[in-house]
Amino acid sequence: MIPYGRQSVDQGDIDAVVEVLRSDWLTTGPKVPEFEDALKRYTGAENAVVVNSGTSALDLAVQALDLPEGTEVITTPFTFAATANALLYHKILPVFADIEPETRNIDPDEIRKKITDRTRAVICVDFAGHPCDYSAIRDITREHGLYLIEDACHALGAEHHATKIGSLADMTIFSFHPVKHITTGEGGAITLDDPKVTAKLRLLRSHGIDRDARSRYGLESSWSYDMTDLGRNYRMTDFQAALGISQLKKLDQFVARRNAIAARYQELLGSLPFVTVPRTKPHVRHAWHLYTILLDPSIDRQEFFTFMKKGGIGVNVHYIPVYRHSYYREHFLFRQEDYPVTENVFSRIVTLPLYPGMTDEDVDTVVSRLRKFFGKRG
Ligand SMILES: *Cc1c(COP(=O)(O)O)cnc(C)c1O
Image (tube, rainbow, N blue to C red; front, side, top):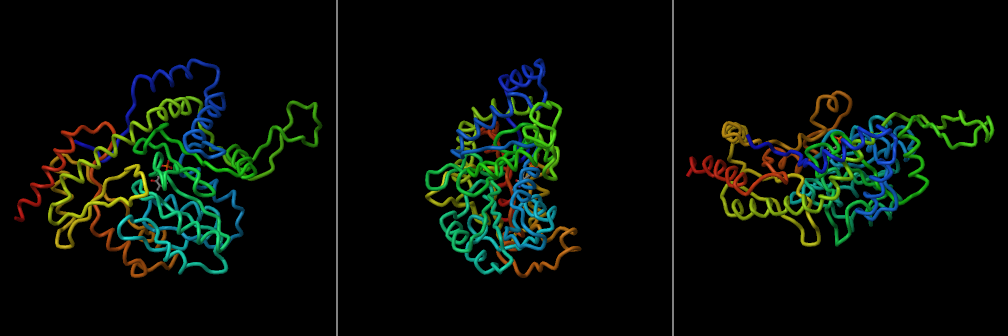
C-alpha cells in the first residue's frame, strides 16, 4: 500500500526526542523556545508561538482578535473543517467565498463580493501548498481594514514572490501533524510580527495565567500568579519541540523532494486524456503538501477511486466542502449552488500519494495503475 502521505522520521529525530525524555523537562522546558526561535529564523517572522495542534493554533489566533459575537469572517469552503471551526468556537460567522479554479485558493474577487459592515477578517488557506494571491488579498484587507489570518497548514516552506510563507499575513498558522511537511506527532504554530498579540497568544496557550504579573500579592510572593484571560492548556511538550527542531533542519530537503515527485507526476500525467494536472503560478515556490488531479466529468470518480485502492494506491479526496458537513447544514443556511467552482472541483478532484519518502518507482507504480484504469476505456 502506498499511502497518500506519511512522515519521514530518522535516527537523528529519535535521538533528539530520547535526549529530552532523559532530561528534567518533559514539558515547558528549553526546547519549546528553541523551536520557536528556529521557526522565526526559517519563516522570517518576528515571533512564533508553538501549540499542541494546528487546530489549537487557529483557535487561539481567532480568540486573540477579540471580535464581538456575530462578527463575520470570510474564508474558503475548500479546506479541512478545522479552518472554519475556529470561528464557530468564538461564535463568529464564517462567510464562504468561492475559489479560483486553477489554484483552488480563495478567489480575491469573491472576497470583495462578500464584504459587509460586519466583516472583520479573512482566513485564507494555501491549498495543497500553493500560496494564495497575497498581492490582491492584501490590497483588499488594507482597503477594508480587515485582519488577515493565513492557514498555511499546507504551505510550510512555500514562497510567494520570493518571500517565505510565515510573514505575509497578520498571523500564519502551521500544523505538524504527521502528513504535513514536518511533524511533532501533533503540533502547531502561529507566526506573526505583532509583539502584543504574541504575548496574548502565549497567555491563552497556558490557561490565561500570567506568572510574571506583578499581582496584588506583591513582588516578593513567588507563589503568586493571576489569570487574566480565559485560556486553555494548548502547550506543546519539550520532546515534541525537540522533534520539531530536528525535523525543521530537513524541511528544505523535504520540500525539494516533494517538488521532484510533483514534477515527475506532471511529466507522466501531463498529456493524458481524462486527467487535468495542477498548475503552479510563476511567482510561487510550491510546497506540494498534496498532489491533486481533476478527472474529466465523464469519469466516474468512485469507480476510479475503488480501482486505485484495489491496486494498493492510497488515493484520497481533499476536501469535502465545509458547508456540506452535516453540522454546518444543521446550523447554517449555506447553499451548494452559491459555490459553483468549489462544487465543480470537489466533484472531480482526487489526491494522489505524495510524501518525501516516496521513491521514483512508487510514483511510477501510481502512474501505471492510473494508466491501466484509463487504458480500459481506450
Ligand atoms: C492539517 C490542517 C489543519 C489542522 O491541523 P491539526 O494539526 O491536524 O490540528 C487545519 N487546516 C488545514 C488546512 C489543515 O490541512
